[in-house]
Image (cartoon, rainbow, N blue to C red; front, side, top):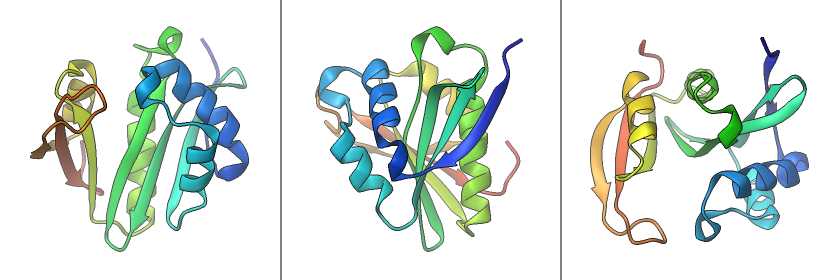
Length: 152
């Protein structure tokens, strides 16, 4: 069994996060080092990095502003999927949002990403709306939300 740990990271980890993002998303959806540095330098933004045997394999980036939080992105390397790491990242995001006094947590997910939709539904997220042609490939995004402190 691999040793899994979570740690909250900032802009000093932008290169690691950009590398992970590039391995998990299509080229037109990847966030580069400059984007990661900019986001992580923004007020209320941090990332939860998941390590397996000391190696970074995924992360969730969260922005908390006032009484709301948004999961900006979440990814796990393909070879580490289906081991519960994404669920741990969602749980970390919810706990961090709650600690930051956010009442609601929102996110967008592609209508075509059924695996992620299932993950978020299991975590208690519910549909709140839809954004037409939100992604670079023209696909729509579902807007999902849930209370930060409610049990999944």
